[in-house]
Amino acid sequence: MAMWIGPARPEQRQEVVELWRAAGLTVPHNDPVADFDQARGRDGSDVLVGMLGARLAGAVMVGHDGHRGWLYYLAVAPELRGQGHGRALVAAAEAWLAGHGIRKVQLMVRAGNRAVSGFYARIGYAEAPVTTLAKWLDPPG
Ligand SMILES: CC(C)(COP(=O)(O)OP(=O)(O)OC[C@H]1O[C@@H](n2cnc3c(N)ncnc32)[C@H](O)[C@@H]1OP(=O)(O)O)[C@@H](O)C(=O)NCCC(=O)NCCS
Image (cartoon, rainbow, N blue to C red):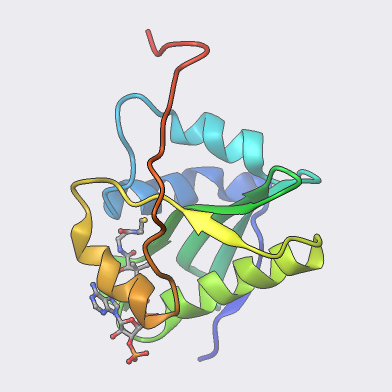
């Protein structure tokens, strides 16, 4: 069955968050429910879901800051990996960004998740010679 990819509906929030949890993408300092609500259906961002019929197969958060595009929370259900769904989700997110006039896409891989580097290399992503700096404006409680 071909995977349908499109914008998440608000009522898919819990299912998407559970997928992100199952994929090991959630961390104590991020609230994935708030992240879903903040990104979904906005001018500059969205959450895309991949559906196999009624079944949620994968999801990705996509957005841009007017300059660069960013991907977050890419996940495919553990039992559905290795079938091209991750590649298809990234392609859909790239098309979303291109449709918003964005020419370059970036993403961050957590230090403990080196295993995913092979996937990104396979679909055309290369490590960039930059250091990411970060500062909380509203530090997690
Ligand atoms: C990363 C992830 C989304 C990949 O999804 P997937 O559906 O299994 O990937 P695909 O089947 O589309 O793989 C595309 C290609 O990458 C290859 N690939 C996939 N995972 C790989 C890995 N860990 N190392 C090397 N190659 C990999 C596939 O073999 C395939 O190669 P092919 O084009 O020769 O067939 C999935 O493994 C996942 O959800 N991981 C947990 C969450 C995560 O780490 N997300 C990324 C956060 S930055």
